[in-house]
Image 1 (cartoon, one colour):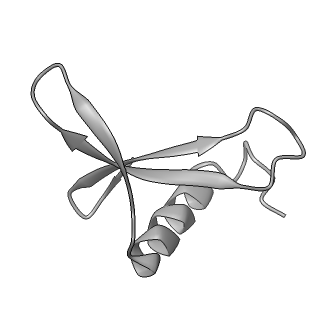
Image 2: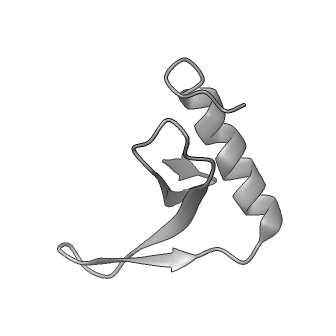
Length: 63
């Protein structure tokens, strides 16, 4: 998922009772290698999560 020119990955358990997601920034090392880095900026985390919820609102129950 892209937000402000940066790629992120959102991980969620494949379980109806799952109540947490993990959001990581994707850093491209080279053509074949990427790393996943935690995000310290709470504002960015919230914005990426809101974008994720909007994109998947019909597929995932966020309540």
